[in-house]
Length: 418
Image (tube, rainbow, N blue to C red; front, side, top):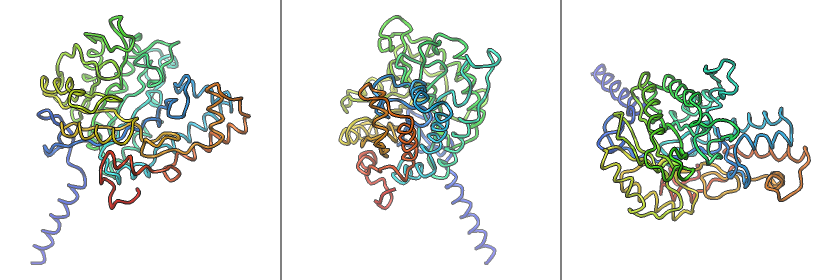
């Protein structure tokens, strides 16, 4: 009897461990995203804008907002050595285990990681041997750490190439593009580096079930046909589809497990010329900002899903008020579409989950950069910038319960502050 009881107990424990370990790789099935058991899963996610890639507007910068230009302005104020230390602390404090715990407790089941390629590999202009790839540890270590925190919280991590080699569009702030250097579309070497990076990532995470998928390229916005510069009017978009297919081929050589997520041209939403699925586990992503939360507003994407039998995912939305948030989430979820909000943290903004408190001195710095104030002293700038990175820590941010509840009503466990 005792042996039988112990056997039953052991089997029960194995079952609990199996369930705790997750339900297998996400995949595309019958126009839905499902888990390893075939159960539909609605991804409720958060995008980590600002961690690996700063955008000026998140800091209150109204002028040129590319990260490389922000870095140059910081260097101008405090010198290169202290600028490097600022960015080291920025990456260390902006996203930690405590931040993932906040999201898990608020009810989120996924995180979208916007990656800057230059944390993983050198720009083509800096490669010691032309055509080869030097791999850097910083980006991989950051991703490994985030994945470990996600795994511990049973949260799927979706990798998003937000800043591709050379930059993928004319909206330069979102990809840290430098117009003095060749873009992704102007340079075969940049495209080959992007393909090589995805292969390296796929090799590393091929057997990791808590990686939810690979978002191959964020918001391409480039005309290939001499129309609107951001590609909103292009009819064929052939170079985009060809690049996606090349990336797919190299990923599938080393990883047959993960979802591949693609975005159209024109900031993700122009799917004209889409040739149809070329892989068994594809998802079509679209982005939705500042438009009505009506069935009509997403009807074009629903038509794509019906035509090609591919799942849809709202890869980015946000930057609005709580009522708009509620209406948008309700709209997409009743249409079996998961979502990822934007962004998790922002300086001095109440419309995200965590508000980063702006140090008094940092306003002086930003006013100077925006052309509305005098140049701060080195001492003032130093204190402001290093106070800011201290304020990035989750414990020092303000938690916006109303935003969390607008996105996932009743999501916070026990109804208390994460």
